[in-house]
Length: 481
Image (cartoon, rainbow, N blue to C red; front, side, top):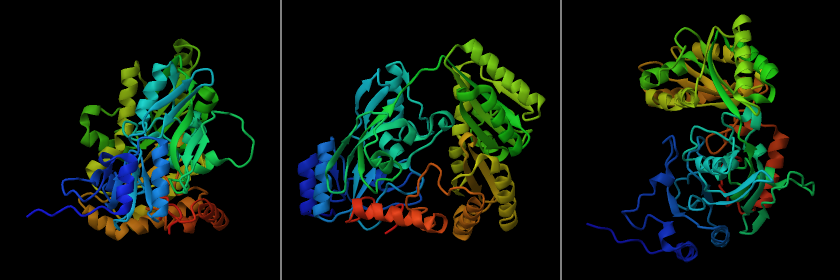
């Protein structure tokens, strides 16, 4: 027996007139599978959308927002749906529109003299990188999900990645935005100016707001000259303290040439070795920590290699590292980075886990890790710690794996909230943040009031109410209902 399609609502009819019937997907057709837009990347949450709307240009976005505002219908903006905090999928009510930006993926312009590239929000990060490279430039934002995440999502969460130590977060890479506000008006802010002191910085207000204040439709991003040399090394270090000392030495010896500095604990690398043995993880078995560091040089490769090797020799002499290997070519360098980027997938292969994206002042990270590891070991006997992340900017992915052989679902039910509280309390005690680069989304929305300054929260709520008085843009995220 087949069910007849349900009749369209007036809003759905209007959205089809705006974007075309093929770009408004609903559950009316039983053959239509909306799960790619309704389920988060980690497959922890699945909602139900009233419709998935795929506009093709900024005017269509504005018209969609106006129609939804008139119908009092909430909108969930979505890029590549690679987020980790349940910030880009609908809730289960069936009343929210998912606004998928993936059709708006064009590179609009490259300005070589201004060192900028203007792209639409749905442009996949890897495609942006390739367009910059084809024009002879570097766009330095680099993430594990760069083959599917979009620049609009990167801006919405102020994504970090592996080269923040030199180039900064996505916020520091953006010079201008085009945004549709909650009333459906378009803010044309793609100037590409490096200096504009004419009032409030609306660009930075939108970046990191997770689609709760406006819908980013395009952005003007910074470009950089391609480095003359890029060198990568992998070092075994005896402790987190030694890793921090090695970082300080790298800053002294390499200066702005230090572009990446990642740290990984032995268990994290052991998971990669277990689930992806073909990657051949170096040096991990005889050391508690490994470091992956990168040096870029604008002069020449010989100068960069000499400088880099001198750094590693000094690190070995001073005991900051016990062994090190330097990639001999780009293929080897990419292989080392691939190992680092495979930790997340290896952890998923191992089973369900509790993820944390935290930042701590670099100088306090060794004490934080030692104390918090010990705390969790006492409270959850047999727990396995997957510690890795961007030590260069103080961002750790401090993840907690269930004891070996334990049922993952039962572990989460019993310990997820407790572990989050223990970890976040420690983060607060050490002067850190409970979200470094993934955002707040829905996952941390109930925790934020416990760890965010109350005055800051009050100011944030005032901004939200002023810009989105109907609470239609990604409601329930960041600040809650």
